Every structure is written in C-alpha cells, then in structure tokens.
Image (cartoon, rainbow, N blue to C red; front, side):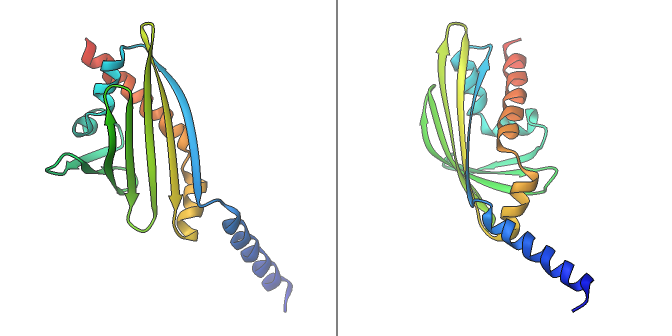
Length: 164
C-alpha cells in the first residue's frame, strides 16, 4: 500500500471515529433578560404566524387548522421544521416538539418569570440528530446557544416595535 493511500485511509477512519463520538442528543439552556413585561414577551414568543415579519431567517409559517402544529420554512437552509405545541401555560411556560424528517427531532422549553420591570426567560433546547452525516453537520454548523440568543435578540426588537 503506498503512503498516500494509507494516509487517506487513516484520515477517513479518524473522521468516522470522530463522528461516532459526537453525541446524538444535545441539550442547551440559556437565561435571557428582557426589558419588558412578561405578557409582552409571551405575546411575541407565542405568535408563531407573525414570525416571517420579524425573524430574519423564516420565510413562511403554515399553521394547522387546530392551531396545535405548524411548519416553518427557513431561508438560508431551505429546511422546513415541523413544530407541535405540547404545553402552553400563559404567561409562564411554553413547550414545543420539533422535527425535520429523518434528520432530527427536539424539544424546546421556554419558561418566563417577571422580576421587577424585566422578564427573565429560561430557554432549553434538546435535539436528537439521526444519522452520521446529520450529526456531523449539526456539530459543525449549528450552535444552539447562539440560535437561542439570536432568536431572543429578534424577539426583543419585535417586543419594542409592538410597544411603540
């Protein structure tokens, strides 16, 4: 076996081993402060139909007739994520299930509490990725903490817009 082929085989083996070591399920929790009353934060976080108007990457939202599930289509990835409402306890707790066919499924929990004039949101995202390729892609290109923080930044702007 020549040296080049041996190096390629070793590199492929290392990549495969690395992919196997990436956990299939990840869990991220982030606490975020909002300079707004809890009802204003709740209103934005639960108004799924309006998201194409204020979320930069959401192209469309299609809500089911029973209002318990919907699909969001994202601009950059062209991916459609399906959501199902699991629990809605105004204005404190929102629980959603999410899925992309064959790639991942997840659970999203948003808990809100009022502290003075501010609202504290605690957001937990748990995602299970299926398949080696999807697992590697998620590991390399998706940061749950950053996603939660960017979502909150866009939600803050929408809360402020609605208050003015």
